[in-house]
Length: 190
Image (cartoon, rainbow, N blue to C red; front, side, top):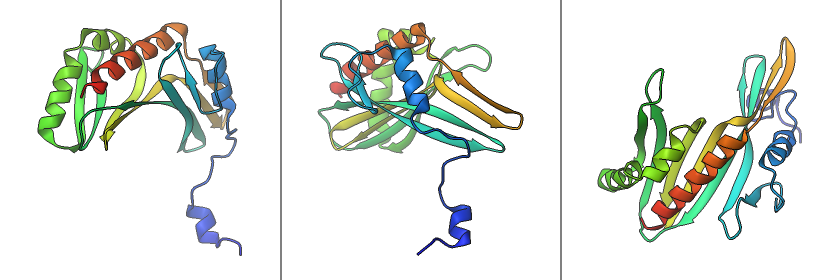
């Protein structure tokens, strides 16, 4: 049975001109990794953590964005539930990091925030990193860190017609790896 016209009009669908996997292929080239295990996971160093990657689309009027979201999973000691975002502070220049609680207990969040904000290696990696979104979720003894970088994304416009890939530069790639290493070290003990 076919879907009704209302379901076709309002249901989830891919934006016009979206090429599934094309942005991931360009990201794979930018990363220069030999051990790309599948279309969705890789490790960036020997004995390193497995990083999952997926494409995410965002539709706008007559255009859409295709962004790559990198996900790190870290087992931890504690129990409970916590979710927070990390952003840069400062309107023109980056002056620091801001942590915003989305869900969970405030005392636990404050403890994690203190540990993350006081770590010099993490701060050194995150301050110059051009990320759009960094979300940390803790649930049932496991952390999930999702990072969406400004690079490794594609802008597709329908009028005027153009398609532009924004590459992930080598310096930014190294900052991502340093951030993931620091986050894994800190969150594993939490």
